[in-house]
Image (tube, rainbow, N blue to C red; front, side, top):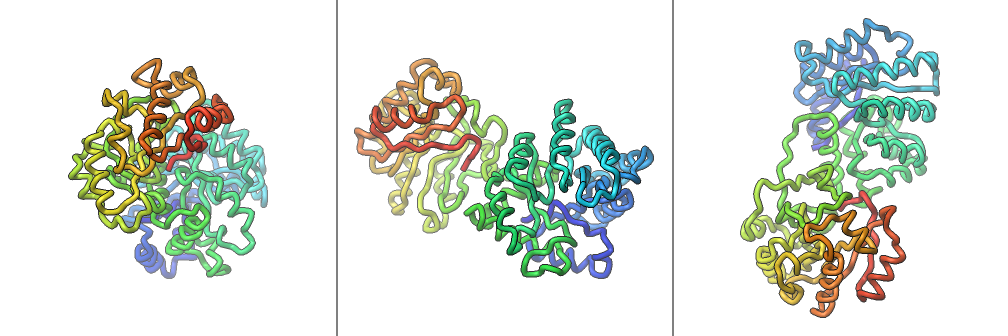
Length: 461
């Protein structure tokens, strides 16, 4: 399912064929549309549409062009519109609000004042912000930083069109980023370069319909059904399949706007052309950087298991194996905690002629109280060991191993054991500020004789 997080179906552009537009969206796989308000009257219409159509949700707010018309009565009515008695159960955001210095249709001081009041409204209602910024990046960042310092409010920078410097600052504040179909324009090369820097975990889809139709329909009215063309372009830019963009952005929208979509936990999940196996949620490290610390999801896959699956249950999930270049034991925990199940599943995979990789924290010998490297010979083609840092002191501080002091040296011994067993092994470290990557590289290649790979902090999957 796709979610159009920013659309203006309440505009008169859709009066003649609104039902047909919604039907075409559904046929194109767009399951949810957020109708974003641009004025008080638009907020009324958005809530009305959300009540009329199951697939539509609403925001309330006023575009910065309307800032001069916003007063206390405006905010009072917006609060009422967002209340359950007025249909507000389907009001999922405050927006679009922000600053627009391109046309200056409202005085800048008024825009800034009203923008701050909308941030307060979002905080009061417990709703995220849908942010509009055009030629006002400095004031936008200044206001967001000062207001978020009081109490952070979640939100999305809609129709992103700025540079990577502004992008990084938005990401650092925890904002999501959405792009419209204008990234398909022939002259949008610079913007497509910016898209590359947005982690898919922070990406949302939008059409901003009726505006900004994709290149093949340029000059015509945009509509939610064209979202599939945006997905195709994002898939190409990020070098992932269309399903990954769809799944991840749908999860992101569900998280930000609290849409209530149920996302079942996965045992086997695909990332690019590999199949990953999630066989346990337990881990013997408590790494400060781990994805487990802030989400149950990786690339839109829910990895929070209700119970640990048996080897048979995992094997029953292994369908269409010919589609994958490898199968990877890497879920939401440390796979060698379930060594017997791992071996049984790997044996099945090798009988099917599949390449098998194990991603581990290197605690397998400590966990099982015996050397396990030779037990993996013939079952695992490659082992990726997460050493992460270059010294024991840093390892204990950052990874917090349950085995305490000495665990770092034991991981190094495990790496040597794997090499002695003839296993193909790589050792990964993270580009954390605390990590001396050159020392990591020397340690891995010269002392341990293994392949070295540097991983990016906060880039998962």
